[in-house]
Structure formats: structure tokens, C-alpha cells
Image (cartoon, rainbow, N blue to C red; front, side, top):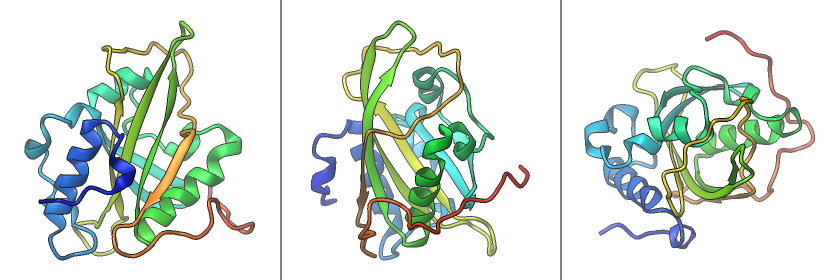
Length: 196
């Protein structure tokens, strides 16, 4: 039986399902390898799943994006750099959160509203957990689920391609602790885009 962190008590079921699965595949390890993650075992949450590759502080590439996330956010960002998709004033914080998550390592829970062109808002919740690469020298990864809390079959038709930071965020201790500060240190810098 998996012990669910209190931070996930009010999270969407997809978040709790990913946490339970990730905990099971890691066994005694602090972080599981990517090869342990079997998409066939995650069919119920696959539309809400994404896998990100943390290549550097300035490049966090989306390697897999579920169709449900394309519908929720209004565009397909497979292959795109999530740093560049953040508003400029939020890029350092996004960079630091992901870099800290894979290098500490720790998970995170997050949430907030998604704004639709009609003006409607839908509340979402998410969880992100680190994965080790399958080959030496490859960048670490993050597996994440994002789901609308009260799903009404929302489909977004955004005209802009921006993924702002969630309004709510907290690191999740997976056994290596969590950062003491909420944001990056003053000297945190992100690099420029350096290729696909």
C-alpha cells in the first residue's frame, strides 16, 4: 500500500495515480529510471501525462505530451522548450524549479486556474516527479500529470502560445528533502536555447 503525501489529498485522481505508480516502480531507489515507466500501465492517465527532459537550466524540452494537455492548454508543445513558453518574468523561476527537482531530487505539486478565450476558468492540479535517464550522460527527466479538478470536457482554443507558472506550487519530499527557499538564489541564471 502506497502512503499518499498530505499535499495530494485534494489533487485530481490522475495525480494520485501517477504518484502511486512512480512510487511502485522506484522500489528501493530514490528515483526510478525512465525505462521502468511503462505507458501501457498508465493508459487511464496517458492523456494528462507529459515527459520533460531537463537538458540545462535554460532548456527543458517536452518529449511526450498527452492529447488531454493539448486540449487543455490549446496547443501542442511537443518538442518545445518550456522555458521559452513561460512569460519572460517567470522563466528564471520555472528554470530553478525544474533544475532543483531533478538535481536535489524532489517532486512538486502545483495548481491554479486555466483561462479560456471565453473568459471561463477551470481549476487544475498537477504533480511532477523526477526520472533518471536510461543512458549515462543523458539529461534527467520529469514525468508529470496535469488534470482539471472538476472536468467538464474543457477544450481550449488559445490564440497565444504561453504556459504561465501555476499560482500554487510546493516541492514534494521523495526522500532527499526539499529546498529551504521558495525561489532561485540571486545569482541563478539560465542559458540560451542550445539546440533540439
